Image: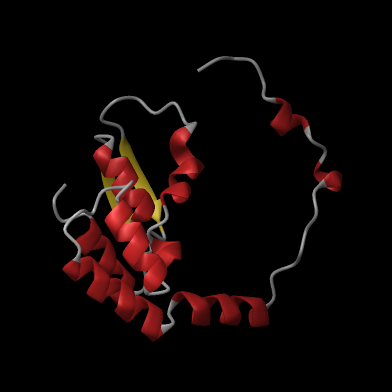
Length: 132
């Protein structure tokens, strides 16, 4: 890694918008993440699709049709693509959801330990990464 500081790190904290997290906000997010219909649709989809790949057109098309695209979109990998991780790095992913990022990291050869509080979403992640 270079020792040059990124200009993104030099933005004054006072210029960044901040919305306090309240108990109501957390409850709303928790309900959305654990919405049983979406998680159940995702699990059924992952059991039925052949191509689990990070860029699978079949998976994305069917996920859009079944309204669970958020969990499979390949754009989620943008979160880590710019990181300069060494080959075979060990990665801890907290809140892996349906496994979109877990899949991306696994396809790149990283050793991933993925954590998820929702049993249904943890099962989805296992299904998504079953061939890795």
